[in-house]
Length: 311
Length: 257
Image (tube, rainbow over all chains, first blue to last red; front, side, top):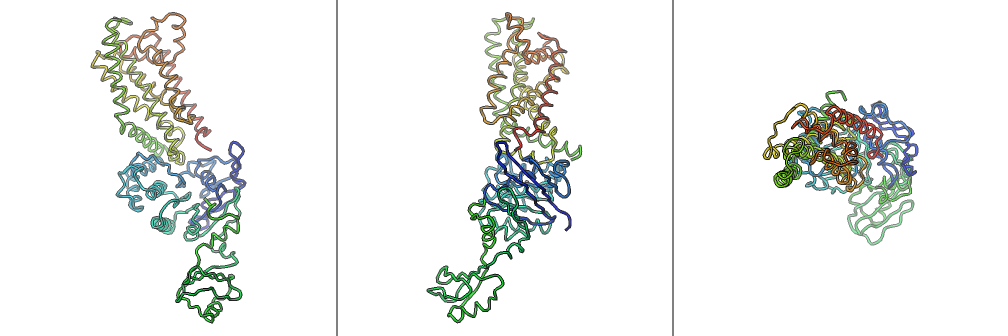
């Protein structure tokens, strides 16, 4: 698609007290994209998102959402965005269905349509049986899904999620991934998310930007970015256990356990030569998988931060 | 958003605010009814018979309108200050801030919620009062207008308090140290004719005196102040507070980073 869902130019934010949270952010998200915004703790991710959602007023800069200027057409822009914030921010004493239906009402959606949309979203997000429960009675994962349902109540074209799977168990996280992927592919909703699960960004997103000290240091298609990595890592499951990793020129081998070998090769290096050498060394490989933390390696390379800092 | 969508948003907020106090009716509706009954038993039944007449009417009849309006004032204020501050505190005010609702719709939604509680409690207290006195209202139109305007004014005042409040202490200081003394000194239980100077003249600077008296005029036809002046003051306060709320929300003070 040609249209940009989001264009940010020269966005700065200096808080009262002098803290400079954003220092000239430039960012473009294409309509229909699934976009990850990564960055270390305090890099400015949440400030960018809060500015988009009109919760924070930018000091300078321009924000356009589907071509509409945030300053001049704020109500229009607000109607196009659905926000899932990092912290739970609903009234815990209100029934689940009321939270979603009322949010649709705040966007001017008619009562009957809001009720139907609420029922649909609660069903889709596995909350239908909790519709009349008070929100505070939900588990952490359910509360996250409630916030996604609420953000989608008015059918936004751009869904912005600030660490949507934080504190969610693996099964629920994968369920959420499936839901968001379907939303992006089938309904064409553009998705911008921040996450500190880098494998999440790698699995879901087609485009990634990294923000550091209030500036975007890189913004590129995920595939292009991963190709920048000079080395690639694989995990090999062996037919028979071995005591020591063999020594093969040009590759790095690390025995993770007697039956699991980690293989690191230069990008583009033919693997058949490596397998031949392994075979000669008496190592038989049963299966192989790509090590999933490639983005993490790239992230560390670009920012100098470990994943535990990337909140 | 077009006008119809703004109206839907406003209605949704009014519904939310009304459900909020209706769900906790034992905390919001019943206590003022009990308090009013106690006022009538103690001040009306026990002490009032010894007081005799005030303003040409029995003491119990004299205090009834003031007690009703006192309930309207304190409940309108309490509803908005508590609801808006807890929305800020729990951050679900963001549900409204991210929506395309206009600032005016947002203010009117909270104000209408406060008015709904003020009026509901006012009517409940009036029903209790009717058990003790003959509440044959002299001017229904004026009584309704004063109740509506008073509840609107104090809902807006509660909202201003909540916008600037940073702690729960901040939302109790004004009701405890400003609103309650002004209400009690505003002639709920006495006519300012009974006050010595300079207290009598000083009382004329208390805006609640005008509200209570114009309501008393509407109910029993007795007032210490001119009705026109009191209504002018109510309308004036309403527009000043509404303008202040719109201006402050536009600036984002106390809400936006």
